[in-house]
Length: 300
Image (tube, rainbow, N blue to C red; front, side):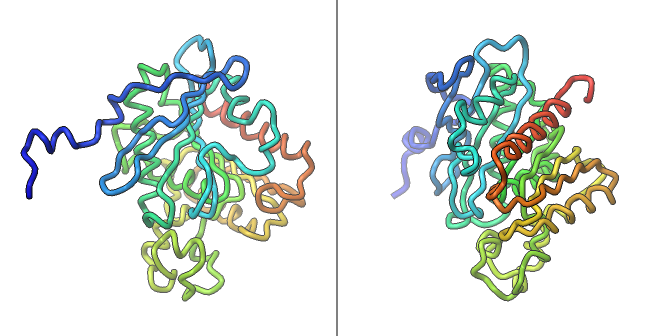
């Protein structure tokens, strides 16, 4: 039985752009955290949320880092940048807020829920939410770096390379940081007919059966002259995502005329496994410095 029009309107989800913000927690000195903020309510799916880390007393509109978690597109937590950082006190997101950034950590639909391009569309919606509420939150979304690790680095690269056409009303990214990210899913497939790999489950089938979608899900095939500068970090001993994936992305970007700073981290495996703590700190510091450079007003 169809619902009366007024009842149907009442049952429709509230627009996240107009929902009140949650009360702020204070997880570290000088840091406010808005946890679990809805940014998208997809029809037929769970509401999607982000965490927003903010400096306590900003002096002006804040540059933004959008951090995308990994987990093979299959799992993962939006507030977890990987096991190398779980013991940090304060944690990496608090440190970025203390350095003067607003840090948004969005969740997104996983491969058990939806296939490409849903994941990057979700992240684009998170960017649109940040932009729509930038005045209220004190954000300068024209100065945004997207940063991700592993599968999150793959999605960060796709977002940076395709965001202008996904949502032209949102300012394009000013930089992208990827850590040990898959970038060429065609080349990554050991058996193109295997539909059970993590990347195959993300695109919805074996690369051999989904050649166009697999190519579209590969950041190397979206490199263009309008792309923002990239910082690409990849371990030389990565047994999950070979460092050749980082090399391929850097080459595609450079061929298109886009600056790409490729740093091959000697002896590091996936998730920075096997890397001394001081070297993990250096990877974080390099990424923070790149983010500072790409969001400095003089660089825009």
